[in-house]
Image 1 (cartoon, rainbow, N blue to C red):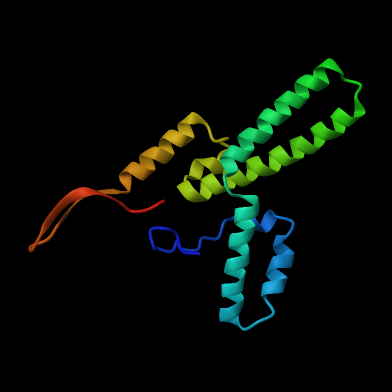
Image 2 (cartoon, helix red, strand yellow):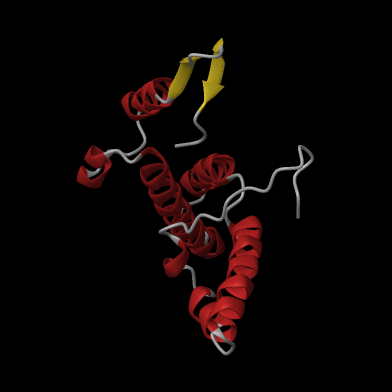
Length: 157
């Protein structure tokens, strides 16, 4: 797949992939060929896994959280409903998994060390992420032949 602008995105391994239940099977299926073919096949399969399970992860976390809050309100009005209790338990597990994957993604993306201490994606964390991106901006390039001044981003660091 080539994006509309014609440039391919570099492959990035996400640290939360090994926790996915299908990862072991995907890895063993891809590892039955010569090394270069193994890596190419694994790259394609992991990208598909990422699109299927982890695309728009922040939105999915918010959606599951909203669904969980709605369910808990229903459970508050009828606490003896066993089906609601089971559904809540499943949603809590899904929420925790998505939240962990989102946090791992943000940690890897931002390279911020304090997240390891348990920062749960607070406003402070996101402000630091924006500051980090701003520092990775090239404001001007100078050469003996040419001087160029514009905003060039160094990418999603």
